[in-house]
Amino acid sequence: MAAKQRNKRSKQQQDKNGTNSPSATQTSADKDGKHAKANPKVLTPNLLQNPFFLTGVVTVVISVMAILLYLNMSWKPSRMVVVTKVHDESNPDKQREYKRSLDTIDRRSNLSLEEYRELYDGKWPVLITDALPTMRAMNWTKKFFMEKYGNEIITIRATEDGLVGIKDTLAMPLGLFLSHLHEGQPKLWTYLMDELFLLQKPELQDDLDDILYLQDDFFQLFPREIRPWNSMLLWGTKFSRSHLHIDPYNWTGTNAVFSGLKKWKLFPPGQDYLLHVKKGSNSGFPLNCFKYSSDIDAFNPDLKRFPRFAKAKAIEFDQHPGELLLIPTGWFHQAYNDEETMAVSSQVMNINNYKIVLEEIFKAGNLKKKSLPANFDTLSPESQVKTVMRLLPKHILEKGRELTADALRQIDGVRNKPGNKQPG
Image (cartoon, rainbow, N blue to C red):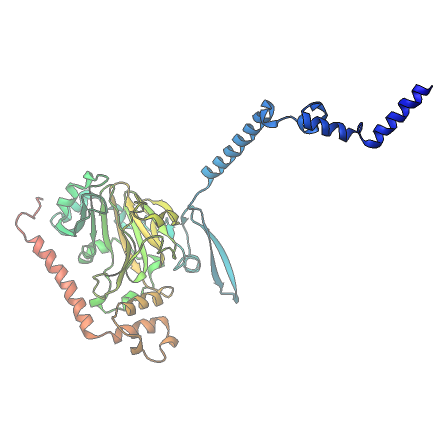
């Protein structure tokens, strides 16, 4: 009995001193490394050493990478939606919005003049698919031109190393050019680009019918001496192409394909910085204006030389025979002939772009704005154009007359050279 009481008092004393408490036991174990099972931190499993955990992590990482790769491959850098605001004529206080995508060109048929002016003219490019099929020019062939105009002199551009190796404009008989038309190579090609050939052939101009969307043309108000040459004949070997550029005077450009296949890249306005645009050179037109172009070949860009071009956005599409392309002001563009291709380009100045064209005339120094009458802005568009033409200095008209005459003399000189006459 006495022994039991002594053991009880000893146990109470130990509890009082904390020698048998869990914390005391754990502290002792931490000090001497004993009783490791009492330490909860040691009991926690190491996840990095668990093969099932590692397998799960690897599976999740691979799945995420696969999803990101799919999204990256599906994303198109050129995808961009542009919103065009158009005034509603039925309610002048409101505007209608049209969303356009750079994924493709609008191909239209049975397009009314009113809808063209509202949606496209001066705003957005469009391919008209039913404007050319009834034209007699659709029957033009290489054989026809060879037999009837083989001795006529035309102007071409030739290259030995793509656009970077392009030579100055050359003059030669049309028959000689056509006999080598099939010889185009990726970096060795020729491109007939003649602004005067069709103008000297009224019978060929008759094969080009008037087009509904181009009937209102303020360029016809220009004196003949300085009126831009219209109806440029374009005929290229496979692989031939134009420069990346905006048309002179920033006019609305047209391109009608009669045979072959033409590829296009059209760049919406506001990307001059990305396109490395060169400014300041002269057009050489009878009424001078500045040229806006780039050394970039958009179909084979050198991104080391032109790194910003990688961010440029464009519409890319093919143009087939019988289709008419209308390119609004402000759009840089480049054409590429994917096979032997014949086309005719022209231009128009109308109510939707006349102010831009006049501004280009002012910028080139042809006329100072202070020469305009005080009521100029209140005049009708047609009257504004007539006023500017009337105020142009006489020496500009003389210069325009001389440039045209000189170009024709050069053609005659080449035509009369010995050896330039083609058989047949």
